[in-house]
Image (cartoon, rainbow, N blue to C red; front, side, top):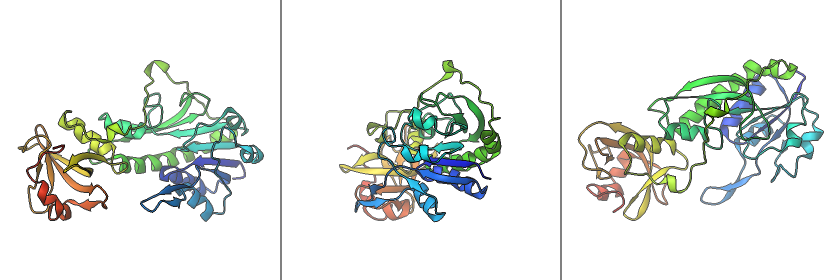
Length: 310
């Protein structure tokens, strides 16, 4: 495959798409991703998953701080197609116009539903049982371009944002490869979106990271899953944040909304309005994530019978 492709993306979901291109022996001539950022408690510079994969395959990497002002290498690459997935910056018109066959984006929703920054998280947060990956033409509007193809994905109660991202990455790679030839030869058809059905998926705010115990049990369950594993939804316990990273819900007798319990020696739980949230994995403030059994047999024991937020 001789057509010249530029790939733009940053996190693991994007690396899954890049891997699909590489598995197809696509001619990826340039990878564009976000600059290295400090991460972790020690604040060490972290190279994103897309950059790591590109370097492994000796593909040149371009990391502009602001792509609106710095895009020379993209124009110089003389690409036939640009593919983006979870890049993380708004792409300017000069970049959109650079490749011969234009720019396409892999967006994690069934467009025009959930345009914007957090479609995967919002689908779980809102209790959806179905989402999908859309292959769309990029234009200056926010996820407004025509759609060439969609691959639907079932959202299970056992899914959280982390597992749904994994499903989306696999679907995105498959969707791109299924349509790659048509994208490269210009025969792909893009259907305009119905603007009357468009919705927006705003980024999860800091305020939304605190679990709202006034909501229904189903809504609380969805909120915890939507925030797992990153950034992690939390409740306050002994004046410290306790992140709830893995949860199951049981419709059984509750000790009271927000009240912590230990149904067994290896289980830690929190009461809902009508049932019980089994917290299989938690993360105390300033500590590493830990399994329920380890927490309830350690410092978690002191929380039994107490109510979140008190």
